[in-house]
Image (cartoon, rainbow, N blue to C red):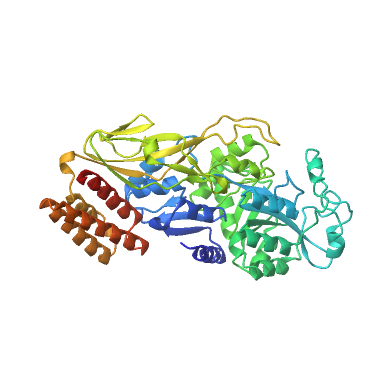
Length: 529
């Protein structure tokens, strides 16, 4: 799914005031799911027609699954119901930019977010006397600048003359002094920068009267998929959406509680309210009940966690299933890896073979694009029946048959001292690789005949052209092997590999079918040596 197609999908979803997109399971990856989720779009998958597909979707963090295998789907999800499982890595949103390191709501704070690899930034906007949307939180300039007065009473020229490096947070005063040239930016300046750096913007609307200007600027810079509005007043946000329906919006719900109602009644009432508005939500702590979290999740309504400025509070939200969280300390996400990099979906071995973590070559995608070695173990997650055994660090093939396994990576994102919170939390978080189908063969069964059987098994996962071509090539390889013409059989295998690369690149067969054939080819080539 190329970027343009994703962005067009987000525009379409928001225009019809929906929250959820249903995508074919085979088209999804952890990166695609994260792309939509970080823009407050819920991803559900359809055509999850195998146990392997169900485990793959669970591992990459899909939020809903449509499948003809409901019992297997339930069993699959239960395999990940561990307290430290993190199928969706928390997204820390830079509240007013990285305001713990640079002056809030200024370009230095926003630029710092981009430099630190933080994907999403929250800003607040007011309107100047001459009708320009400007980035500032308060109604007055007194707290954050060296000036005084209401923002609405000052022209943009007057606002630009102020130095915006003041704060009422005593812990940040000295750091803010490092930015003597910090100014109040305009919304347009921030949009230009965000577009260049591919930042996601959460824009909190602090006043009315700027609806058309905001809508026009977002449309002018084609930032609709990468921007969502937020605010306490849904009427103002709806007015902006009336000018341009492709802009998403988040209603901040504060002060509501389920008094006089059951938890379920309150959850239903809140969800109905949000659905009617066509807006997702940031509920206050008293509003964010576990019943609401569950009710919203099962209806595809994104809920966002309010500003959390301690490691303990972020970790508590993560444990409740809240994965978008505002924070003055988004830099703490530097210890949170993005995902376990993909490994082949199929592994074929002989009875008695042992696989180790090192042999799997698994790596973890860290922030800033760095890959690190996986630190964790191996879990068998499919029906086993004595096919394999694992002690966590290696996997032994015991007898002919099939099962599923995956790898897990454990890390301690908050077990170190940081500025803003010296607490060290030893809690381990765990993320998973994609699942792998393990096929164990008797040595006597090693034959190109298995290639024919694999093609037939995956008939529904390839086009007619790919099926006919691969079936024919595999049958030829089997015949040459049967006649002990191994050189000719090897040439046939080379033709199969060439065809596989061509067909998977053109979308004529699924990745699972490709990996299955490649795994069988690898063990045959090893045997024929």
